[in-house]
Length: 288
Image 1 (cartoon, rainbow, N blue to C red):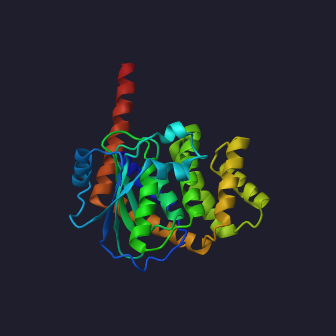
Image 2: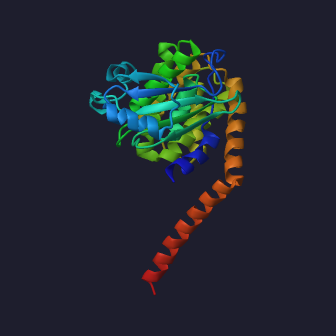
Image 3: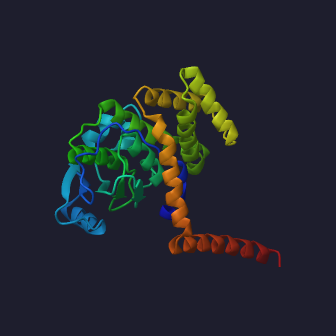
């Protein structure tokens, strides 16, 4: 249910920052990232769960690599001392978009991963993120960026990796305060409006973010507003091709429309309706 619901959010979360070329990436190619601290049995179980091809490239992600990009963004205790979360990225045809599905991740939603990956320059791929038990999921983003570099032979700039991780964490932290859906919607809408209005100064950016929050009925504290301004100020200075943002948003909407029009999508909506109907029936029964 969580995965299907988050799929709907992709209509407002898919944007692109094309920082690298995909000329060396082969359609259909898969690469697996495994947390370094998994046991051998856990590794085999996750490979089976993700249905990893026998010829898939496998790389490992260490806890030290997590700390490299997350120190200063989240407390060291939250990053922990082990790298557990793992992933598989399978490249799809150009223009197909980015689809993320996760399991056993308790801090980062699929939509948050999607936004952060695109900030790092990853696109046109199906991505699975998983772990043998509930984990924060911080190792997965580090691993996926490492996988992209391995397959594309293109290095993602360190500052881009840092801001992608910061975006993921900040969206999750904001979600704890205002709700995950609102946080994802806000970050997505900010990107959409930056693409349209292209604010030139920090104050222009601050005014834009505040206006968007007001439109969405979201009340931000001064600290939350300052953090968002600082984050998007960094992105603004990383040469984002904002002209492509609008087209990527439209592509995401097409993905969601196709899902809702499919048999699977209709079945999902029916389940949602049945769920709320059962709640209403239960409440009515209390007064009979």
